[in-house]
Image (cartoon, rainbow, N blue to C red; front, top):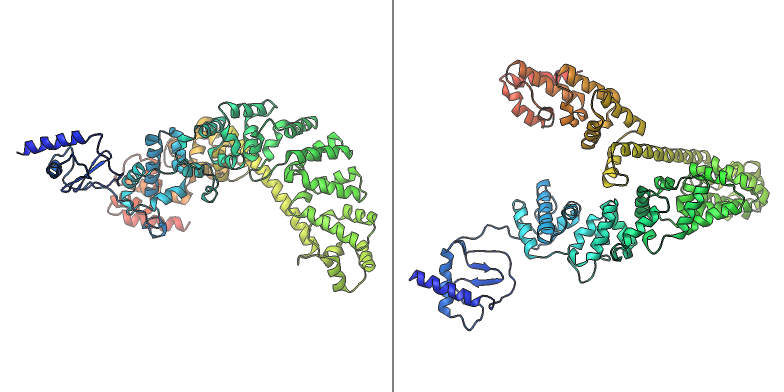
Length: 619
């Protein structure tokens, strides 16, 4: 009887195949529900209206539950995914590292295995879209079911893949609404965009910088196959290195729109005549700045027309790149015009700029311009203004001035009298009219210090960049940016510490890999590195190569190393510890774990541990 019922049921199912359809359902399987592809049968009830299926046939479907290859007799243990307000989720406000990793893995599996994205694309998106992952995790009720719940959710609920994709390119979630394409949710549907994205990636542009390019020059992502690569090649043909082209594209994506920017090409040609190498510009471009190449070209031509010789102009740009690049030369263009109008000669203007390079920093130019207008408004002669400007440039640019009418009313004096006071002692201008409570001398000193610090920072950055390039880092890469933040010290200091490891007997490539694994190694001074290596080899008896396997040994403070290994050596003498244990086993664990797995190996271990702690802390 049972066999006959099963046969009748199977016959019924075969008749229903390709004919019976019902709505898409939630991926939750229980003892009262059977899923066959897109067909859902409710056991114990009539199927969705189908005239050719009898009530007896539908009731007999219940017996299929006993056949395990069709359905289990108990519910499938699947995490339930709900859609609560993110603020109400139990884990959205406090996401553990494990939960975040599982969410990344689930998103990676979806993008790579389900949606067939390239492995590297899927991996980068899953690891660099934290806001999107947090939104996904807000739909999970239990942190213990993150992996299974999200995998099931992504399987049955297609996501807008452009959201995590754009976030992984360095764009913030608030920027996405205006950038998301209409009527598309799958990346594979925009194959042209993906192709141009891969062209930029393969050229060497960091993925996290491509979002800025997309936001500022979206047109280039619609180029047909091969066009974008040819445009990049065209800039290399101007004599620029690949690293310079990468930096240019990141800082000024509009260069890739249309043909090669003719103003930019002319600037390169003029810089070449000034004795400046074409790749010089790379070191001074900033991601968050806007560059107007036409204005820069006009500024160079203006200086030429004013009689500035190539030698002086080249010297000016080399010593102070900001004169050309900061605000695309707008400030220097205005200042030169002002100073020439006052009667200064071009040679005097150049001397002024070389003496006071901070003239373009912050509000210096604006303040200087305001001081000139102040003196002109109280009736001072042009030649007197020019004399004061040339003698007190730093003073005049260091502070903002109040209006002449305000000062005259406050001092209750005439314009002529104020004019005479300022001519006799130009420093009185800032002391009488400054908006700031600081004295003019304090302002000037502050401006000087800030400029000096900025110049030193640029020098340190260039030295560190050169050092990292020698280690094998790729210029402008994400790894380079991260390394620059982790390394502390000047380039020569980093090189000295690096050489210290080489002198200890390690191979150059070995040390390079050690530094990449544990950058903090080079944040130790040379003396500290030598002391730790000496302690490791001569006192502990470990071979030098052991630090290669665990370079972080050099990052731990000497007190921790001394305490842990003193305890370990005591245990060895007592026969309670192995002859040789890995450095990481002793140093990397927490104090509680060290006590549990080392100190407690011997009955007298706790007493010895306390004694060592007191003796080392008292040193």
